[in-house]
Amino acid sequence: MFTANQASILFKENYHAEAHVVVNQGGTSSGKTFAIMQVLFCIACANAGQVITIVGQDIPNLKAGALRDALKIYADSEQVAGCITSYNKTERVFVFGNGTIMEFKSYDDAQDAKSGKRDYLFVNEANGIDYYMYIELALRTRKKIYIDYNPNSAFWVHDHLIGRSNTQLIISDHRHNPFLAESMRDKIESLKAVDLEQWKVYARGITGKITGLILNNWHLCDTIPPHAKLIGIGLDFGFTNDQTGCIEVYKQNGELWINELLYETGLTNPDISKRLINMGVSKRAGIVADSAEPKSIEELRRLGWRITGVKKGADSVKNSIDILKRYKLNITLNSLNLRNELGRYKWRVDRAGRTLNEPVDRWDHLIDPLRYVALNKLKIGNLGKPKSWFPYAPRSPEAGVLEGMMNGLKFGRQLEKMK
Ligand SMILES: Nc1ncnc2c1ncn2[C@@H]1O[C@H](COP(=O)(O)OP(=O)(O)OP(=O)(O)O)[C@@H](O)[C@H]1O
Ligand SMILES: [Mg+2]
Image (cartoon, rainbow, N blue to C red; front, side):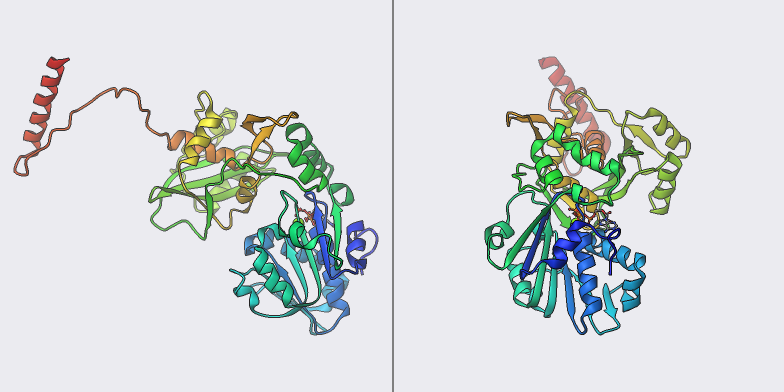
């Protein structure tokens, strides 16, 4: 169904795997998800009346993972498209001419996962799925289970599946994917110079010990609450290899609510401006941008944006992280790239294993603008001596405003004399 120039070695390995559970552990961009989706399309086209369920942590994750790959395969392969009678975008279900269905789902909890039965199951990015949810899904799967993930640290797959007789383990990395751009390979390999632990996980697919995340005070939310106050927009410029990252930060009930706006390469300044306008961002909103690009800042200012370069000051990285740690951070479900960055944002570790006082700066195109907003819009008031001081003078309920102020002034003068 897929010719040699359409499929990687991972496709063949998965296609011929005989175990009941096929575990695909691997570095980033090794082609795991794509290969498993190709296998599932082959199964769907060749077998009538099957139910195939692809499960992800949530819908945004599926849309950026297995569902995206499925739609690409559907668009690129005439043979696959010829077997499919319909794709329901809202329900995320492919229906095949032979009665087989392929559904993309996320479940709230283990109880929710008890609904429905299937022949084939694919758990995409399994470390985002609860073990008890997996058990409920696996119990209701008749034929075969595929699993994929990046091994940031050991989890239930390592504890309960790998090593069992009915489980096959396939480990891959970007070198197994002939369809990857060289620039992406370079980016993945460049982790070696920055953080060996992350390089092991993301470049080689070896189970890591990525613990000690810098920001772990974040939670998911559906949307920004309607009455939350906009604190600022953070913008980090990128272009060829690095993404331009932009986020909006709101505050309500002493918590921060954060939403990703942009995460894209190749954007010029007029592109950024257009994108923000299209997303309904007001030009008066107040953007704090990377101060390393004054020309871009000026260009956006001339396009009508209220924009300033971030004032960093000494120890700005540590200070901004300290500020962010004082809040509960609510990240919208759709902020997928920000969620990914937060899940990888950790302190650098040198070759001797010592933790350094600086973060790994590879995946921070959205965290950096978040830090800019923290630095310039959420400054915690300095605790030194106040510069001007007007003493508090309690006012009797009958007293007018003027009288209250006079009392205050008198009280102030008395204090002056006492100094
Ligand atoms: N057979 C193929 N034909 C065309 N493109 C492919 C093929 N296999 C993989 N790719 C492309 O390579 C890239 C990486 O593949 P994929 O997303 O499947 O990797 P992954 O191992 O699941 O990565 P991650 O661990 O980051 O989820 C994708 O852009 C995908 O479209
Ligand atoms: Mg994947």
